[in-house]
Length: 188
Image (tube, rainbow, N blue to C red; front, top):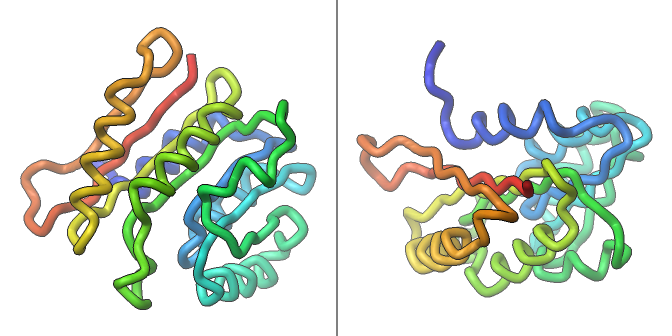
């Protein structure tokens, strides 16, 4: 067995906890890979809320959803993930959420996630997270603004009450060019 990169390991952690009919969040749709993964797990009766501020990302993902026949499982939302709370009922639970922090590969590298909006979205996800659910954040920080977001997110998750959440940090430490790492938060 080979050790998995951060994104793949996030899928390894999420796959066993997401079931048919669940509601999950893709906080940063990007190229749609996580959205497709989540849609395949929630099944026809489940629901994925997919957020992105870039229409290009939503268009690419919509095409993939059409090709895979999973369009009806996903609500693509052209809005920042910091507005997540507006798209969930006050008592609605989610099973999981995934974030890929940074920028959309192959696009404008000045359009990035920011700590203020990420932390607001993370708080909303944790508020709605069911017991045993996981929020996965893949932290890409090798770009302007990335280090600041990384530090803010790390500070926030380190301060979570250990009786309510357990937080895992997973990543390779002997690679050059600031390799991404995974933060996984599970509600006890």
